[in-house]
Length: 195
Image (cartoon, rainbow, N blue to C red; front, side, top):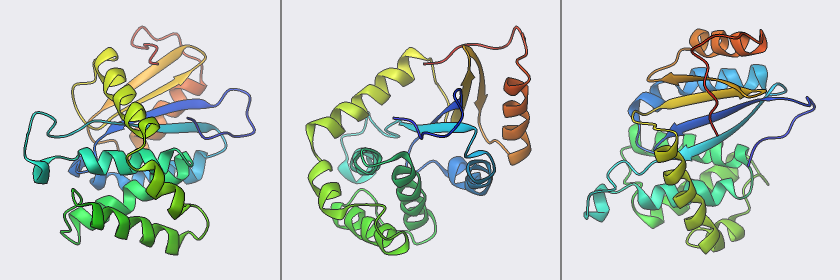
């Protein structure tokens, strides 16, 4: 699901991350600025990984947090973005345990309070463990494997079949340089298409 805009060919951005990604949290200001500045030229979606998917310890797993982000994303990419940001704030700054369902509900309530009407809480509750949400997360995991994403965060940008891949921390300047490179319709050999 992509954010829609008035341009016929927006740059499609896929942001590969996971809820407890400290590098993503560190570049949140750059990401927010990019979305605010170029919102009419881009569409975006989050592709979520499970940080500790080999762990059987539920407390260490980010599975529930991933489901919650996907549930918010079923409503809109903007809802997913704001929910993920608030989730990271809860974990990184407030040291709350985002593997707990009650904490995820608290975060949803906080997002709803700050952005009234953006996140339907009743639907969020229904979608949290719905089949569509689990399928969306499973599709993300398959996409990560298919596109050989092996570090987080990774951001891919695609326009008219040409693409760029940015792994690791991306400053605002790095993000905008990549956008402008794509907008310049370059035939660079380093460009790859990502789906």
